[in-house]
Length: 160
Figure 1 (spheres, rainbow, N blue to C red):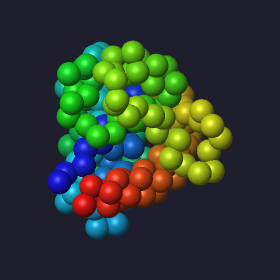
Figure 2: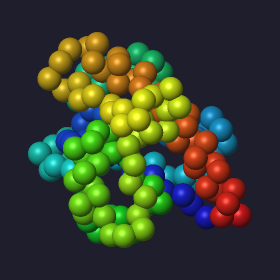
Figure 3: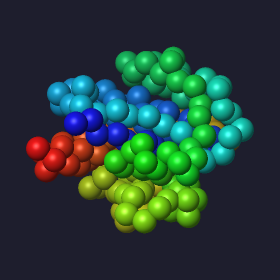
């Protein structure tokens, strides 16, 4: 069985694609890459079809990640059937997703999987800031990706 995760931010050009790239590699390093599909999307459609923000791509590249294939997409209500886990980067997007979600779908904050993060912790939007915001986002998504990988591994163990 394949487990499917979708990471969601506002426009799908900064936070969620960075998290997608990092989580995909984290899962691959744990031997789960062939059992998990990781995708990302935005709640808004402004950037559909666009590549990742060049600052996000630059930070990822400097840290050994490859985000060049990313193209922004918009999350729609009918997508909930595609995923086992939908993770929002912040409370606004979490609220938007929960409003769309049918009953029984697991929608959580991405950083809720980081044991060092306080309750309700978000991945801040770096779009209107400088390089340091993108560096911060990378650190936050790397930390949370470890917890997401553990959750996914545990979920796959329960299925089998």
